[in-house]
Length: 95
Picture 1 (cartoon, rainbow, N blue to C red):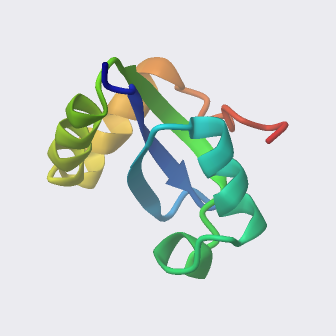
Picture 2 (tube, helix red, strand yellow):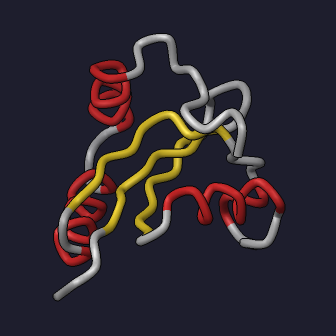
C-alpha cells in the first residue's frame, strides 16, 4: 500500500514570492523549511508561511497535482489559496 502525500504552498512574510512543493510529511517539511535545513529557493527567499495545502491518498497523485499547480499563473495560485485561506493566515503558526 502506498503512502499519501501533501501539496503545499509557502510564501514569504510580505507574500511576494510563492513556492509549490510536495511531501509525505507536511509538519516535518514545514519545520525543515523554517529551520533553514532545506537550502535553495525557499531558504533564499525566506519562504516560511504555509498558505495552502491539500492531502492526497497516494504520493503519486500529490506529485501530479504539484506539477499541475506549478504550471499555473500566479493569479490562479492565489485564487486557490483564497478559496480556503482568504485572510492568508499562516496555517502552521506553531511549527
